[in-house]
Length: 286
Image (cartoon, rainbow, N blue to C red; front, side, top):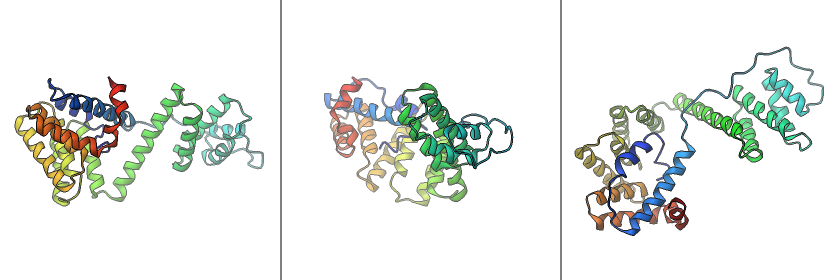
């Protein structure tokens, strides 16, 4: 369920579906609190769409320094600032683990190392610098800003890899459908999901994604709600363990004041999704 609730249409989904007054039971009230917390966590992990690289690289100021000299952290910084990233990245990876340098020097080295790693598309090194920044500066707002952009850039590059290597795959079509949802192009998103279902009718998750997309549209008509409900039912025929489908069917039943059906679906959702079973979530969001 958490994987299915991508940022592409979370906001629209929550606005259109979970908004009506009234409750079937205290059980459902607690479940909704836990579900909102889980969705909120999912939204935080992927809030930002693709953005530009950390910063524009400074122009080269000269030839690469003599590599026979010791590769200290200062030398690595010098290489990075001179835009000699191929030489700077391995130097900074080794040097930033040193405990003899000041905090500010290590911070500068790791930020420059991250920028250089992205510039030369060295994703392994970028991951190393990201981990170091997370561990050493977990509450530094400037570092967190840089990390957000780095992850966004890596996400964009991975999406491009998918488009190059498997443009006709189901995964590529899912990504395209999510892009259409983010643009508010609901007809095209629906067309993508329906095409995926036609291509792979028995694949788990596709009917769920189509139903969720239908409910995420603004001003959803009763006919659209009914179509979405049918998609969730089809999803459960393929994958009875889809907690998201159970939850949304429970929410739709609750809005119709069908409390018995709603509680049954909510009960299945709590059994299938460990996040919904944690009692602390209700207290945290109360």
